[in-house]
Amino acid sequence: MTYDFAPLFRTAIGFDRLAQVMDSAARTSGTPSYPPYDIAKTGSDSYTLTMAVAGFGPEDIELIVQDGTLVVSGRVGAPTAEGEVLHRGIARRAFERRFALADHVEVTGADMHNGLLRITVRQIVPEALKPRRIPVRSVETGAVPLHNSPAEREQIGPAQEAGPVANAA
Image (cartoon, rainbow, N blue to C red; front, side, top):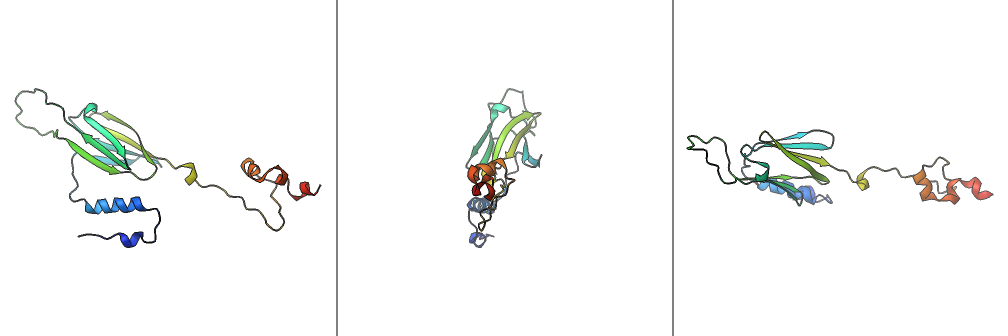
Protein backbone atom coordinates (compact mmCIF):
# COMPACT_ATOMS: atom_id res chain seq x y z
CA MET A 1 0.00 0.00 0.00
CA THR A 2 1.41 3.40 -0.97
CA TYR A 3 0.36 6.88 0.03
CA ASP A 4 0.54 9.99 -2.10
CA PHE A 5 1.16 13.02 0.14
CA ALA A 6 1.31 15.50 -2.76
CA PRO A 7 -2.21 16.92 -2.15
CA LEU A 8 -1.25 17.83 1.42
CA PHE A 9 1.66 19.98 0.29
CA ARG A 10 0.07 21.81 -2.67
CA THR A 11 -0.93 24.77 -0.52
CA ALA A 12 1.93 24.58 2.01
CA ILE A 13 5.13 26.57 1.70
CA GLY A 14 8.33 25.61 3.48
CA PHE A 15 7.22 22.15 4.61
CA ASP A 16 9.65 20.30 2.34
CA ARG A 17 11.35 18.62 5.31
CA LEU A 18 8.01 17.30 6.60
CA ALA A 19 7.27 15.86 3.17
CA GLN A 20 10.64 14.10 3.13
CA VAL A 21 10.10 12.63 6.61
CA MET A 22 6.63 11.36 5.75
CA ASP A 23 7.84 9.94 2.47
CA SER A 24 10.75 8.08 4.07
CA ALA A 25 8.48 6.76 6.84
CA ALA A 26 6.06 5.42 4.25
CA ARG A 27 8.87 3.71 2.33
CA THR A 28 10.43 2.06 5.37
CA SER A 29 9.39 -1.52 5.56
CA GLY A 30 10.00 -3.49 8.72
CA THR A 31 11.67 -1.19 11.21
CA PRO A 32 14.61 -2.89 12.93
CA SER A 33 14.07 -3.60 16.61
CA TYR A 34 17.72 -3.80 17.69
CA PRO A 35 18.82 -2.16 19.86
CA PRO A 36 15.68 -1.30 21.84
CA TYR A 37 15.23 2.38 22.76
CA ASP A 38 12.98 4.84 24.59
CA ILE A 39 12.28 8.48 23.76
CA ALA A 40 11.14 10.64 26.68
CA LYS A 41 10.15 14.29 26.87
CA THR A 42 12.03 15.64 29.89
CA GLY A 43 10.99 19.31 29.68
CA SER A 44 9.09 21.76 27.53
CA ASP A 45 11.96 21.81 25.01
CA SER A 46 14.14 18.83 25.92
CA TYR A 47 14.11 15.12 25.15
CA THR A 48 16.14 12.06 26.07
CA LEU A 49 16.79 9.09 23.80
CA THR A 50 17.87 6.01 25.78
CA MET A 51 19.21 2.94 23.98
CA ALA A 52 20.05 -0.45 25.50
CA VAL A 53 23.51 -1.23 24.17
CA ALA A 54 24.75 -4.04 26.43
CA GLY A 55 28.16 -5.31 25.39
CA PHE A 56 29.21 -2.03 23.75
CA GLY A 57 31.64 0.46 25.22
CA PRO A 58 31.73 4.21 24.55
CA GLU A 59 34.52 3.61 22.02
CA ASP A 60 32.23 1.25 20.05
CA ILE A 61 29.41 3.81 19.63
CA GLU A 62 29.36 6.59 17.04
CA LEU A 63 26.87 9.48 16.93
CA ILE A 64 26.58 11.64 13.82
CA VAL A 65 24.14 14.49 13.14
CA GLN A 66 23.84 15.30 9.45
CA ASP A 67 21.08 16.87 7.36
CA GLY A 68 18.53 16.79 10.18
CA THR A 69 19.15 13.14 11.01
CA LEU A 70 20.77 11.61 14.08
CA VAL A 71 22.61 8.41 13.20
CA VAL A 72 23.56 6.13 16.09
CA SER A 73 25.79 3.24 15.12
CA GLY A 74 27.64 0.59 17.04
CA ARG A 75 30.54 -1.52 15.85
CA VAL A 76 31.70 -4.52 17.81
CA GLY A 77 35.40 -4.80 18.54
CA ALA A 78 37.32 -8.06 18.48
CA PRO A 79 35.78 -10.66 20.80
CA THR A 80 37.63 -11.33 24.02
CA ALA A 81 38.55 -14.86 24.99
CA GLU A 82 35.81 -15.96 27.38
CA GLY A 83 36.31 -19.66 27.05
CA GLU A 84 33.84 -21.88 25.27
CA VAL A 85 30.50 -20.05 24.92
CA LEU A 86 27.62 -22.47 25.45
CA HIS A 87 24.85 -19.92 24.87
CA ARG A 88 25.02 -16.39 23.44
CA GLY A 89 21.96 -14.38 24.45
CA ILE A 90 23.57 -10.92 24.51
CA ALA A 91 23.48 -9.58 20.99
CA ARG A 92 26.77 -8.01 20.05
CA ARG A 93 26.06 -7.34 16.43
CA ALA A 94 26.71 -4.10 14.63
CA PHE A 95 23.74 -1.73 14.31
CA GLU A 96 22.70 1.59 12.87
CA ARG A 97 19.59 3.52 13.93
CA ARG A 98 18.42 6.75 12.31
CA PHE A 99 16.24 9.37 13.97
CA ALA A 100 14.78 12.37 12.13
CA LEU A 101 15.33 15.64 13.99
CA ALA A 102 12.92 18.53 13.71
CA ASP A 103 14.10 21.98 12.67
CA HIS A 104 16.03 23.85 15.38
CA VAL A 105 16.75 20.66 17.36
CA GLU A 106 20.29 19.94 18.47
CA VAL A 107 21.94 17.02 20.23
CA THR A 108 23.45 18.44 23.42
CA GLY A 109 25.25 15.41 24.84
CA ALA A 110 25.55 11.67 25.30
CA ASP A 111 26.64 9.43 28.14
CA MET A 112 26.72 5.74 28.88
CA HIS A 113 25.92 4.04 32.20
CA ASN A 114 25.09 0.40 33.00
CA GLY A 115 24.72 -0.57 29.33
CA LEU A 116 22.35 2.30 28.54
CA LEU A 117 23.32 5.03 26.08
CA ARG A 118 21.54 8.28 26.95
CA ILE A 119 21.43 11.03 24.32
CA THR A 120 20.05 14.44 25.30
CA VAL A 121 18.34 16.59 22.70
CA ARG A 122 17.07 20.16 22.99
CA GLN A 123 14.86 22.28 20.79
CA ILE A 124 16.14 25.83 20.39
CA VAL A 125 13.82 28.55 19.13
CA PRO A 126 15.84 31.20 17.27
CA GLU A 127 15.28 34.86 18.20
CA ALA A 128 13.80 35.50 14.75
CA LEU A 129 11.01 32.98 15.45
CA LYS A 130 10.11 34.24 18.92
CA PRO A 131 7.07 36.52 19.19
CA ARG A 132 7.82 40.23 19.16
CA ARG A 133 5.63 43.27 19.76
CA ILE A 134 5.17 45.74 16.92
CA PRO A 135 4.14 49.29 17.97
CA VAL A 136 1.16 50.81 16.15
CA ARG A 137 1.26 54.56 15.46
CA SER A 138 -1.48 56.89 14.40
CA VAL A 139 -1.01 58.24 10.86
CA GLU A 140 -3.61 61.09 11.06
CA THR A 141 -2.12 63.07 13.95
CA GLY A 142 1.45 61.86 13.85
CA ALA A 143 1.21 61.45 17.62
CA VAL A 144 3.36 58.86 19.30
CA PRO A 145 2.42 57.45 22.73
CA LEU A 146 4.50 58.92 25.58
CA HIS A 147 5.08 55.53 27.22
CA ASN A 148 7.46 53.90 24.79
CA SER A 149 9.86 51.14 25.70
CA PRO A 150 13.61 51.85 25.24
CA ALA A 151 13.67 49.71 22.08
CA GLU A 152 10.70 51.60 20.62
CA ARG A 153 12.36 54.95 21.47
CA GLU A 154 15.42 53.93 19.43
CA GLN A 155 13.25 53.12 16.42
CA ILE A 156 11.17 56.33 16.69
CA GLY A 157 14.04 58.77 17.23
CA PRO A 158 14.50 61.64 19.72
CA ALA A 159 12.58 64.27 17.72
CA GLN A 160 9.34 62.29 17.76
CA GLU A 161 9.76 60.79 21.24
CA ALA A 162 7.96 63.50 23.22
CA GLY A 163 5.02 63.67 20.83
CA PRO A 164 3.41 66.66 19.09
CA VAL A 165 3.92 69.07 22.03
CA ALA A 166 7.73 69.00 21.69
CA ASN A 167 7.50 69.52 17.93
CA ALA A 168 5.27 72.62 18.34
CA ALA A 169 7.80 74.52 20.46
